[in-house]
Length: 466
Image (cartoon, rainbow, N blue to C red; front, side, top):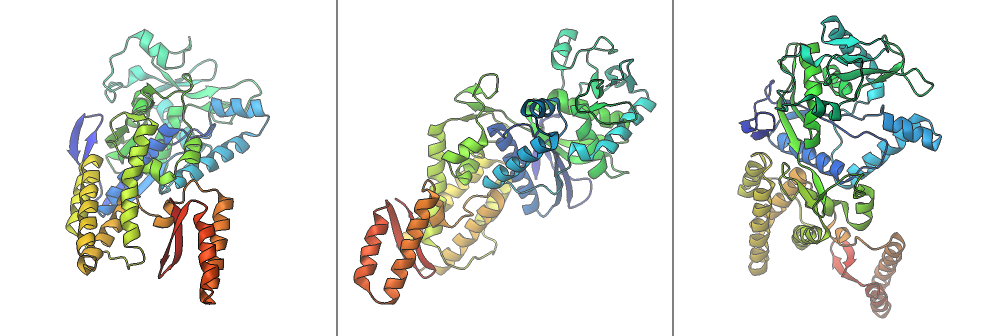
C-alpha cells in the first residue's frame, strides 16, 4: 500500500509501526454550526482510507475529535441565550446524522475537548517545565516557537513577521510574533475552565496533541500515530503547531505519514462563509440522495481541489445509477464472497494512494462486461456469482450500492406518497391472493398514476420512480 505524504511531498510505501495495526487521527469539526461540503469531503476521504486499510487486513484504530470548546461556540451560546452544552450537543448530533446519511463509518474513538482537559494541562505543564512554553503577566500560556529548532519544517514555510501576525493571535506580551496560545486567560464572566494556570480556555492547537497522546500514542513508539490527516488548510498553522507541541512535550514525533485533502470550491470559487457560498450538507441532502453525494465527492482524487457544481453532480448520479441497475438485474440472488480478479484490481488501485479514477474506470468496465454477458447469457451462473461478489466488494470498500436498488430509485418521492403507494401494493397483493385480477389490475393502474413503475419478484413487489 502506498500513501502520498503531504509533508515529505512524495508517495511512500505504507509501513505501520506495529505489524498489521494502524493508528489514524483526523481533525474533526468544531461544533458551533452545520457541517458544510468541506467537512463532508474530508470525512469521506478518511472513511475511504480506513476502508482501504481494513481491506488490506490492517486493524485500524481511527480517532476523529470533536472540538466543543471554542470562542465561536461561546459566542453562539451567548447570542441564543443557551447553555454551551446545548449548542455543542445539537451540532454534534446533526453532524453524526449527516455523516451517516453519506455512509461515513463512525470512528473507533471520538474524543471531545471538554473530556480531555487533564491531558491538556499535563502537556502544558511539561512544556513549561522544559522551557518550551511561558506564562505571561496576564495569565496566558504561549508556546515559544524560538525554542523549537524544527518549527516550520512541517509546512516548509518561510515567514516574515507580518505574515506571522496575520495568522496567529497578536499580543504585546508574546516573545515572538509566531508564538501561539496554549492557554488563554479569561478574567470576565464568560464561560471558562479552571486550570493550574488560572481560569481560561485551551488553545485550539493544544487539544489534538493532548488527545493523540492520551488515546493513541504508545510510550515506547517513535511516532505518536501512524497517520495524521485533515484538510489542506490545516497544514499551517494547526498541524505545524500540533507537531511542535508533541515534539517538544513528549518523546514522540507526531506522525509518520501526513495526508491532506484538497479544498471544495463552489462553481469555481473557494467555499467560505465570507463569500456567502458555504454549502451546508443538510441542504444538499434535501436535494440529493446521500449516496449520490458520496459518489460525487469521492469521484475525484482526494488531493485535488474539488469544484462542486450541479451539472457534474448529475453526471455522477448517472454513473452511480449504473451500479444500481445491474444490482436490480441480480436482485434476490445470494451474495457470494469469493475472490475475483476484479476485486484484486480494485483493491490494488485504491491501495495506490486511493487512486479513485482508476477504481471508477475498473467499475465501469466491470458493469459493461457484466451487463453484456447477462444480455447474451442470462443464465450464466458463474458470471452472476462473480458479479454479485464484485458488487458486494464495491459496497464494502467504497460504500456505493448499499441500498435496495428499488428504494434507491425512489429518492424525491415524499414520505406521504410512499405510504400511499406501499398501501396500494399491499391491497394489490391481497387482491391477487384472492384471484381478483380485475381489482388487482385497477390498483396497478392507480399505482402507475403516481409516476412510478412496479416489478413483481420472488421477494415481493417493488416500485421505483420513472
